[in-house]
Length: 367
Length: 161
Image 1 (cartoon, each protein chain N blue to C red):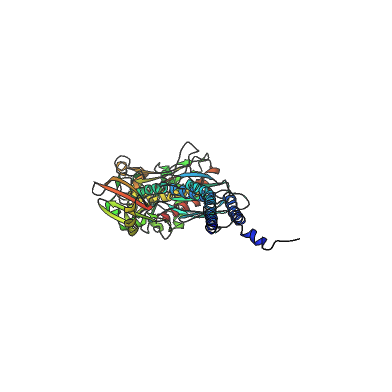
Image 2: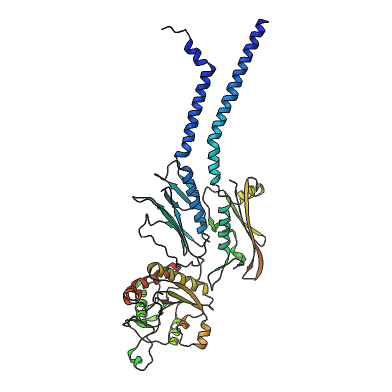
């Protein structure tokens, strides 16, 4: 074979060859870039991160409660951190992860954000639940957390600083039963429930009160200072209760049970004195106790805080138990559950400890 | 004459080569870049949230400053418990912004202004709405402790995306 000398060099130096080479490199890079547009999921991850962060901002602006179901079409993992959402496929620090920030409420804010990482296990995370309930905003999923449940009954409590509770809170177990007085027709056992009338309000009120004192000896007044005995069911008049409350501390928690014909209605109602200078503090205490009870007892169907005019009761209804909500005290009267619900389904028969613990936790949460 | 013609021919080819490499190869590169960048920019434009987040955040701050009705527990946006609640500490304590976010905040009540990231505010505010954006919520509130009406201003200044 004969090669003409220099022919390879000539070919390489030909403008056509150089052009083809340059264009080849450019087009290879171009095709790789075009192929890359569809092959990674950076756009989708960014979109999900932005949507999630914006949704969290909106959840922080909700008044009342809300639950939003967010479909995770691409089966991504999520890390909801303080101020930041990270969306990823394999590793949290992968190069094409999606990331977007959002503003959390500060110390003057209304709500608290609870961070959580949602990593898929064997089951894909098909749905995420963005929840605002009470004072909390969080994201969770039943595909990751089997215990996940929302509670749309929770109330939004005031987070501002209010009058501190003095460490000798008086407990007022409502009504009172005295066998001797009963024979004379002067003792009131309060509401009676269940078909066997096994649930008697006066008895349960002092049992709950005694358990409450057991949980919080450090914050409640000594045993003998409460409006009636915490050792046995006993009768005390409203005026005697008021004079006991007047003698000590700045806070009163009164315990009563509810009675309603509708057995699907199982509420906790908190009465507060609407004319008191302590109404803000009383509402905050009531709110925290109700939320705590609702959190512990999913059977509770409704929560309500009702301001009452104790002045009117003093004038026109001397026997109304809400008269214990003195004007110069932080006070809450709880009317818990429904005695008419059958015994096997009734929290008043089966969950007395949880009720007492719930009230105690609510007092603690007041701060 | 032959020499000159030769030189002319050479110069013409050199010019042609230069134009070829400079113009066509350059053009090819530009087109390649556009093919990659246009869809990328188009997709990213779809991810722009505009001022949605800032609007929601202003609304949140507005709720934080609103009067809380002690009977119903609801917020009343036309009232404020006291003008004193708007101060240097409050403006720091309303929202915790992400560290990377460039944002300044101004709260004004009755002509008194309080700032979060004041230096940034002073640079960015005059440049809004060119390089920066300003979102202002202004409303009159009845202050409960002296029953007077005062103008409440909540302003966020942030970098334009």
